[in-house]
Figure (cartoon, one colour):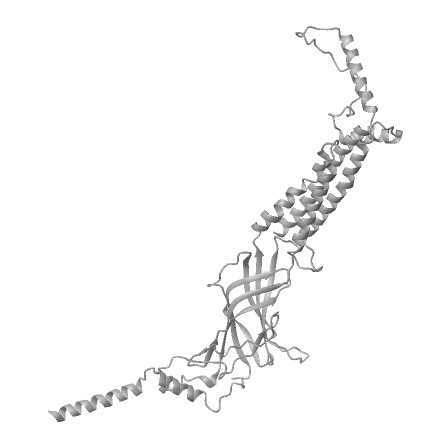
Length: 435
């Protein structure tokens, strides 16, 4: 009986040993042995794995931290994913380690493509992190996913601010290795936004990736492979409409109203200067939000500068009207009197004034008696109407300085109203075409 038990135990022991050798299971010791075998004395992290290493690259965008228009910089938080094959680290042909599906190591021991951000504004150092592990598959495929905050330069076009769209780039290139040694390839999903957090000021229109520099130039010069990630961002303009556009448009129509103030008061010049200072303040506010460059001029700044000029011109015009009005009963030169009584009156066509546009002469027509509608002598009525018409005409031709000031006020009001409406219309047409 004891002999049978002993034989059975030996059988199962031999069977389990053979089973374990034929179908090994993962264990830390097994993975450690595999690392020791792969990273032997023949392996060097300074030697690239093949003649031309193909690096499949993609970028996972977590968030757009900021797009600084003044400094013209873009800050993006993301993870750069790179995949390449190193045949020296493949163990799919080693049956003893079939239980190990993947191993991990760091760049201290493994060759990695040295790359840097070409248009970085912080530093030009090679992307490196000794604590960031890389995943190695049995076929020698290595996946490395370093994460960072990339701050790059971005040439901003503020021509259509605040309805502008900006296009920025993050460009990765190799350090030391030419395009004959390392070539970048855009992965199938080159830009991943599955974990993207929306930015409050900028809306992402599109993201794309493009590689260039992989082909040798005919001149034989050394070229470097590059991969460029493009960001097309559109400004969210609601905030700027409420806080900039709307107040500016409201103030535009305050300019012609200076000529609707009472000529007898002293507020006309004060009012014009107040509007002028308001535009100066807004022009300064907009100038603080755009870069100090002459490459592209902001239409918003041009509009404010134009309105500032119009408001400036309205000040001496208002002072001129007040000066003419204060002349009182001083005698007028016949030429000035003629121009005021004909040209100004025809332009203003103000029928509320005694010097309004009327046709000279003619019969006004019959009038009925106010006491019940009884007829009166038609000839007497016509004579009275003619006398009233002649009296009005006399008033029309007896132009005074005060009447001239009233005419000037009306003409300037219509002129400045037409100018501000025209300029505002052109400004919005330009923005609408871009939008």
